[in-house]
Image (cartoon, rainbow, N blue to C red; front, side, top):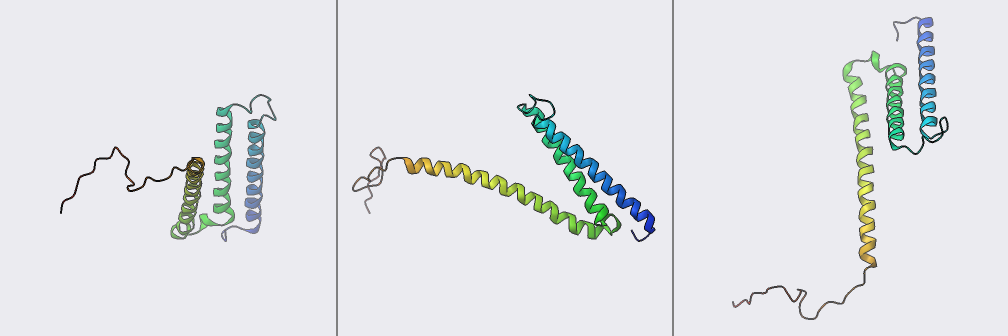
Length: 141
């Protein structure tokens, strides 16, 4: 932004603040609509909740993009430096998604372990761990 004068820089900052405020107000309105505070009876609809969630996620990603590119001056940097910042961020997002998926798998396995632990334990048969209907070959060696 060194090519801009002081007054032009102030205008860009004001524009950015107004844009972020408007997008935030839109997000709040969508959230209130999705939870049924604006129109009652809407909060139970799964399609409305999913649509509101996607809209809020998209607007939040747009705000993050705008902040990084305008206020953190990434749009004025060379492409290599911008990619060295943005690619690890994408890996961080991937890691968060992977950790949520792994945590859900652990939760499901925990329920299986609790079911197995609640079953009564039967004593082992003497002599062999194989069930009686298992075929055994006699070894003569």
